[in-house]
Length: 143
View (cartoon, rainbow, N blue to C red):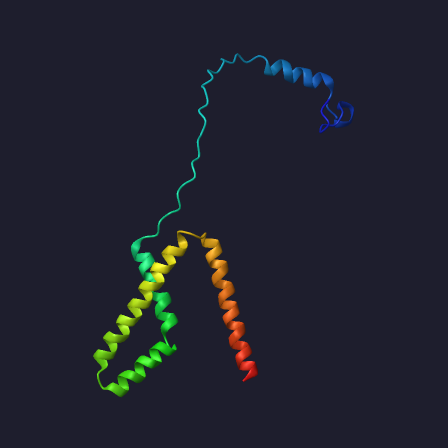
């Protein structure tokens, strides 16, 4: 007897009813099924999906653009342009400087990525930003 079923006397089903059901179910002539061999399914790890060039470019542009609005580089460029009366020369000079610093950042980032795991780079950047924030807070608190 199965543990999950009630005894026949308690369930209200007579033994003869079960035997009749079994006899009725045996009346069918079933054809045997032909067993097909089961092929194993191999699930390969899919390589990480590469983002499109436009998505990477757009994300980088928006991130840097928003980070640079109102920072000291933009304010310095604004003041130099106002003082020199040569806005295009200041524009090309500041653009060349930003391109050069971005190039250094990309080259240094690719060099670090080839030697250190991305998780370690993220944690290191977080710790460095935290230390810089604490140093700035301490400087303001002392000053």
